[in-house]
Image 1: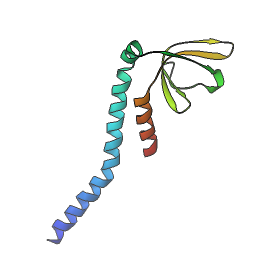
Image 2: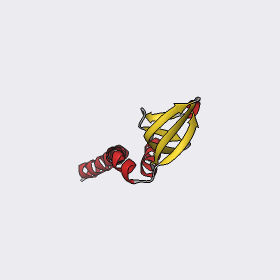
Image 3: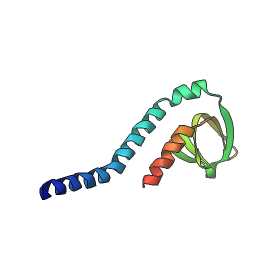
Length: 106
């Protein structure tokens, strides 16, 4: 009887330890799916034009996605004139939420 109790406790503790890893894995799979739909969203959603000084641009994915303040921005196209980026794209609310969730795990 005592061995059964130990096995149950051991499995319960193991499940608790694996839960955060499983949650992170699920979030990363969802993030990959959202990234795979980037081109479709850029073609169907209303694009916005933003301008940022070069020193404020932090690319998340080289020339495809960057942080604008605390939001991810999917880039359709950009130009650089006079030390300023002129970026066309869409704000990615879904991926921003997932990135925030992943950062909370770290």
